[in-house]
Length: 158
Image (cartoon, rainbow, N blue to C red; front, side, top):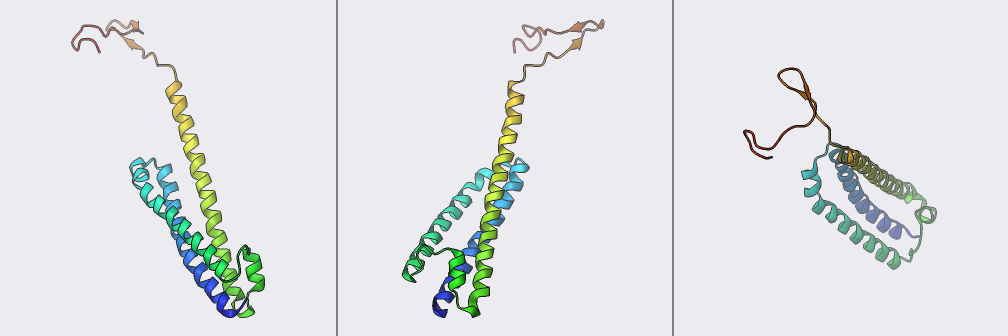
């Protein structure tokens, strides 16, 4: 790999990492909103999330095209680092490590979000399937009433 090729790869990786850094921040905020049950924010954030997905797909397509153009198609990060000129090896290593860190964080945070949502849904399901409580009240004479007469009366039938 030439110095010019390495510089192009590093410049692209810097741009790619900025995207993943922003996506990491978004996913972190999403996790906090899921925990806080902020459903309005979650619904409103769908367009932002779709934007991140489209940007990521676009960047990956550009990466594939760039690597093809540079003769690096199919190369893994370790191979690129090994082939990188010595004076740029640390910079490329740093960019590849940052990318790996961001991707790992996003994957684990998304897994956490799914787990949190599944647990919340399980709790809601238990609550929904719980038999109706038979509220106990007492008459003016201290006699326990378990069945309420809702017909007639002041409000009529409820």
